Image (cartoon, rainbow, N blue to C red; front, side):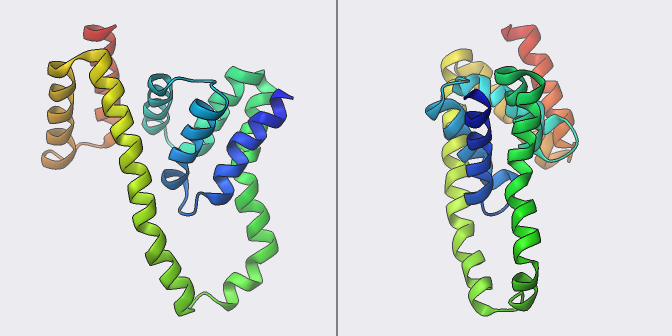
Length: 176
């Protein structure tokens, strides 16, 4: 039963998460944290941060890790397959249809309308992460990490992976 749950937890966000990994992360969070209760919001944010620090697609890394924690090696395989299966199925089944309508105004309009929804979902997830961080670390630590992250990412143009690793090290030293 756990393998079926792992499959559904990553397959459903893969189907409805139009826009790739970043768009499906809030949907995966809903399944993993709120529906199945495998992780807390804090644990999910740590898995997300670790996944962002590693190269490759974020959704597959998260699916592999969470699948492994919940179902061992087979759980990791099921999680990764469930993440890539929607794209694989759609690419095979609808390749000719997509090619035929690639320049359609309706398809372009749909993309324009979906982007704000993705932005709102990412904003809500960020707010939940902030609230969890604030509760666990306090005002000073949270504000300090936000300011330093902004400076490193926006002003100094340091790669996000290095900023994430630095924040993890900071947390391990000062908050752990």
